[in-house]
Length: 132
Picture 1 (cartoon, helix red, strand yellow):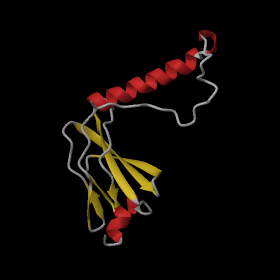
Picture 2 (picture 1 turned 90 degrees about the vertical axis):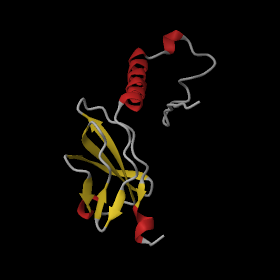
Picture 3 (picture 1 turned 45 degrees about the vertical axis):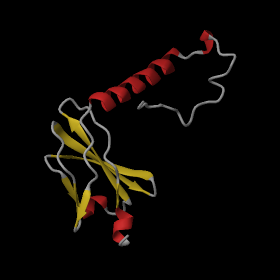
Picture 4 (picture 1 turned 90 degrees about the horizontal axis):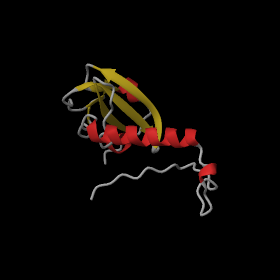
């Protein structure tokens, strides 16, 4: 059965113990965490589909258009860490000047309501440039 687990990598270890009581619950934190989890689930369930893995042709990265996409978020990574994101509208490609310095690129579609879908599988650039 497919599932998603949300975790907080910087969680305070004192927040959750066998001795938790309602008076120790932060209503503001609980509300923000619940909203974030619900927004993430909604985006995964109802957001645009993820584009297929982008391709590299010469110095242009391109991807297949996603039905209903108004724009795309292009995530650039270096050494598995986010480098920056670029939002593009009306195109399904970026040129080398945009992704200079990135090791990998993934793309997500955004619909007219601003709901972003899942990211595509990443295009690993440094392996392509090494000829592997």
